[in-house]
Amino acid sequence: MDIKNKVVFITGGATGIGLATTQRLVAGGARVAVYTRAIPQTPNVAALKENPSILFFEGDIREENAVNAAAQKTKETLGSLDVLINNAAIAQRKPFIETTPEDWDAVVDVNIKGTLGVTRAILPFMRDQKSGLIINIASGAGLYGIENLSLYSLTKAAIINFSQSLADEVRGDNIAVFSIAPGGADTEMFRACFPDKPALQTPQQIADVIFKSITGDITPDDRLVVDVFRHAH
Image 1: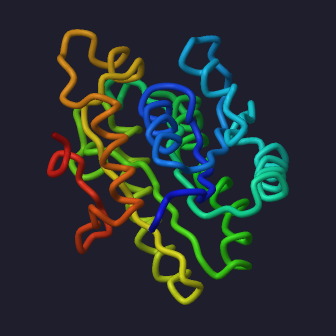
Image 2 (image 1 turned 135 degrees about the vertical axis):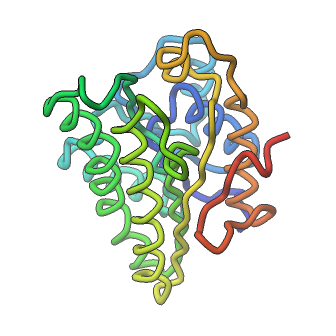
Image 3 (image 1 turned 135 degrees about the horizontal axis):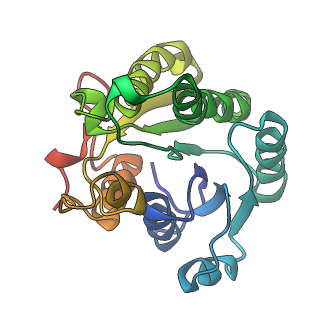
């Protein structure tokens, strides 16, 4: 896909991997709608807000009406919805036996139900235009479960399987779906979970893999997964 002037809707696009991806997309000529829980008051975000080809929406991906309104506004303002990047997620590190039903609901509601809700909001626009690309940000933890990250690992494995199922459903509408699996990115979430471990990848490295996966310079494997470990440099 030629990314120039394409419209990308990204969740969690104002911090960490999402922010780096937003910056990379804008540098490549894309127009971007950023849906974020909160808009950080940082120089990087302030610079993005000055760009007329970027929309910012502040909201929770679990709020169906807000997500639907953002999708509609993006279509009306920017003219299309060409790429969806489901990036927003949360994690907590604790042994499974110490987790609670409230923990289960929190992680599943954001990482799985939030992804489903955003996808359902965007997909009809892609079907109407008979084209689109949906990228779900999974994790190495979704490929190989990680100790004390059982809930996060569970949800990211689900995202990979959801991507595979949805890809078959929408292929006839000229819509592609796959997942991208980063690992150990230098983000606030990783540092909160692993304060004593060095990160393995930078947000910029992951953003570059996401960008190249959109343009077709990197393609998913037969599981419909792009493993960032194989491509980040």
